[in-house]
Length: 261
Image (cartoon, rainbow, N blue to C red; front, side, top):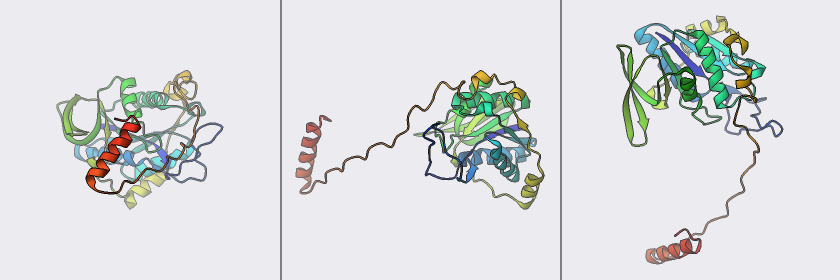
């Protein structure tokens, strides 16, 4: 079984700073980590390899520094790491990013399962995984909390929703996005760290994966950040005091005054 896990390197901070000129994240001086949701995808890929055999390939798109995320993925059980990096990819939105990753996955070929975290903590769009599936023409199961079975060329998984979960069956190859309920990521072993240190991480450029440069980067991104600003502080609310009946009546009167009721 060949499993491809898409991972993203993200800033390890909630205090995100934006470059006012480019409207992109400022990464300088900020420690980077593997997107936490992608760690669950990686762990599930390694567990599937342990159950069914095969190999796990970690794939990431980003600047040269993203190589460190791929080495960490190898220390956690991935067999290989591939970095998709090119100035042509700079400024890609989720559509352009999913297209570029899909092109790299086509080059890898022969895959059975593609795993992604449900979303990245720096963008929170949850669009890249499904976008990859669309570009590749694959079935997809999102928000997977458990893989029940893989047999007969099919996979059956539990997809989490607001009220519980759905059991969905799909043909292989398939793309899954996973939630943190699916497993508990392992800690890197000494053997894994040694393998990561020795690993050769190939870097693929846009032309090497056959990507149309008009479909990546800023030119290939139909969405763009026009303006970034801090919303004004909300005015303080009112605190009502008195008997419950009086408070309810006063609250209703205030809501009517605001034309909410």
